[in-house]
Image 1 (cartoon, rainbow, N blue to C red):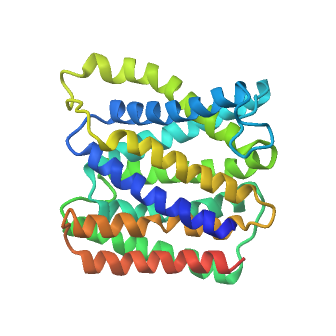
Image 2: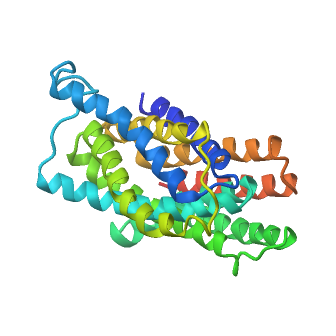
Amino acid sequence: MWLLLAIGSAIFLGFYDIFKKISLQQNAVLPTLFFSTVAASIVMLVFVLLSEMGFIPADNKAFVPHLDIQGHIRMLLKTVIVLSSWICTYFALKHLPLTIFAPIRSSGPLWTTIGAFVFFSERLTPIQFVGGSLIFIFFFLFSTEGRIEGFSFRSNKYVGLMIAGTVLGSISALYDRFLLREMNVMAVEAYFTFYQTLLLLPILGLLWYPRRAKSTTFQWRWAIPFIGIFLLIGDYLYFYSISLPESLISIISLVRRSNVVIVFVFGAIIFKEKNIKRKAFYLVGILTGLVLLVLGR
């Protein structure tokens, strides 16, 4: 059951990244992010209202319970971490090819493993060490591909933003392990979504609106609400999966990150990006390292 949920989450997250790329093509980043979260908030507000009015009973998996003060503080912290990650990755995705974005994004479980090593005193097995080394080797080889396409992994700010966003996403994944042990899945989903919208309002007002005439014009696109909706479904399947007592978070993390294959294929076929064979080889190398990272447990 939990594995099927994880596979479903990966599929929805793959299309979530594709909708982001479609929405961000020559479009303003912050309002795109804001309106996608508004779409998700509207969906979750329906579940909250139906729960409050008693149409969804308390024993139903769609029921949204109240949070205490401590719960709201935890959700606020999660939102700050995730929004920081999203702002980095949205700006990066706007300017990077999908076939560059996908392999960088696929390195997320490596940073999660390193975080578990540092914060939870987990130790790397020999197989995990080999897997981590493979990821670093193919990541380095992949960086040479950037130079061929005219930008440096060291100096290109969007590559830096992509790596920063991926690391922050791994920090969020580690925090999710802690949250989902004590909090209801729908409560996390709902209040996390609401806090996204609330925190983006001042960011939009201070960073984008005063400079909108000098920056990229915002254009409404049909794909924008699908960003929030597909993320909502993907996250729910992920949260529900890791909340099940028999689930294995290491396997879930790997399956969830396999969404980059969907993104990579879309970039290759639809956007007809360059040097696909070499990039595919490097991506397979990174994913092989991830498999060893998981099996090494």
